[in-house]
Length: 128
Image (cartoon, rainbow, N blue to C red; front, top):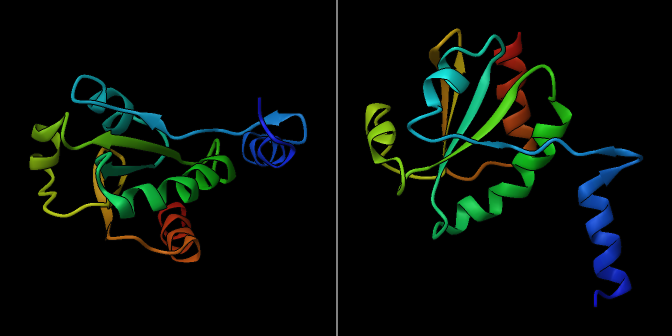
């Protein structure tokens, strides 16, 4: 049974009005080319791992951004432990590591946890 506080938090994060929030999509080695490189819109890929505390801290921010930029940019997550070959291809040496892809090419890269405002500036620049 959930408390009233938990229910309010769940509603806040899962629903906005009657519209369900857009979530980051999960990509892996098998879906990366089609979902990221062939996308008609820019894609921010979060290279992360479940044991990475800064990655966990970034997750709610990325969920908010996925909702705010829905239809203009895709937010995707790739687990580097499960998809090491993709991470290696893009030189991922530290996580969280965010790469914005546009027209199938890396456009910009952000390493480490960053505040939402800084991420928004990078996303807006990519949409530019």
